[in-house]
Image (tube, rainbow, N blue to C red):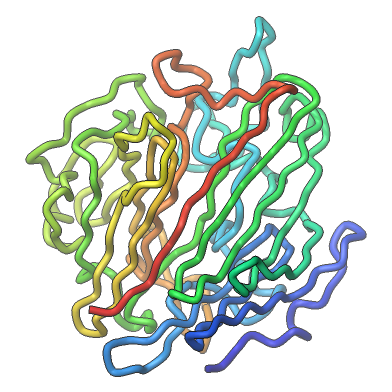
Length: 361
């Protein structure tokens, strides 16, 4: 294993000290993190021949993360992930205007992933912990102040990553606020189960347990409709490779010759952990299962990657070098009363759990 080096992540940003954190489990697995954006930097897992590889895309230094064209590699995204149309929402009779930073839109820009200076670009506090099972964890904390990127309320956020002895990564999110606000957190990791981005993810076999999606317009903003995708090119209820239908079209969700950006609706009204998606790479035998208590999961095969970013071991990240499966609430939820609420009141606690479990067939 060529682990990331601590000296490549030692820095000071906005007065905050940036560090590298390393977790190990009893199976020989290793995962690394930085408190810059509470990012999950690497995940070392074996294949069917007991060859270990890092299956998370990223870089070997903090400087490269700061200079990357894609800004969200493995970061915690917030205060609200995804898009908010025109950056406007109303809460308790008050209208709020957020920063509009989404380059995908054309005529009117929208708010994306928490804004120009969201959670992904902050220095969090961080500490290594050990749970009652003897598993190592790293916990990050951040205080987002009232008015940051236009959001109301001071909000205290906590994210804990636990490396399981079964080669799982459990992510627990929690938050409290002193004023009514909105919260929708996720992790924006990109995975390649080859462990080698010279081979893209179009051959990865995907199963997503959903027959419905959030309909979006051509700027990826939800229309408010939940639509059936059964027996369409978006239907992954039967396992199939990502590349098998990539030439087809589905407005706002599948772009011909490029790929998917789909908000899948999960049948998860009880807020219990359930298996949302499975990804398998046949050559290595690696499997990734995604469990979550969230109502949706965003699937994106990184088709906007254009080779600009040079990642670990000098590998360039081109279209479909990785895939993201981001558990979350629905995009633009505050503007659609029929969507599950992402509102948070002072007397409430935001909680979210997502687990990425790595197996071998």
